[in-house]
Length: 173
Image (cartoon, one colour):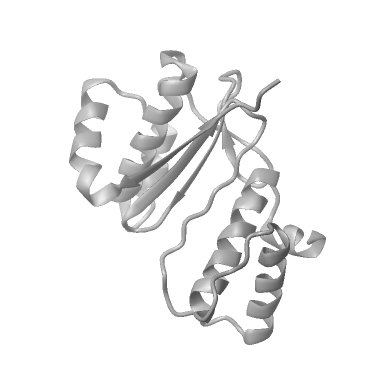
């Protein structure tokens, strides 16, 4: 049996926010919980745009019956739509949302903005080592910040797919 595809979408939030808001006004897809959750963040407009994009992409795979359906959450807080038959994950920075949707059992993704790393060196080393061990692909050469963020993104994606806390993943890896 062939593996189910994973739809992966990168959404530029500032450029698409107005269009996503217009689509949402015309045909609501967000739950009341989505709206309330977005309002708690300082970047509420871009957060709401990310949620709108997520809901549109989920609907593309699962159908219109998932509109406004509240997310259930597992122990780690990872959202799911019971009975929808899809797995999904959302990662976002201020400017972008990365969304994965599949009919497979689970999916995890992460997206990081390049920034200075202020974490203690021994913690950075442990994360780099763990992130390196998750795949055969090497970390970027030469730039310690990029290598760390790549390792961090690998760990976050793996952790999100597992539905556990990052500390648990670090202990296990």
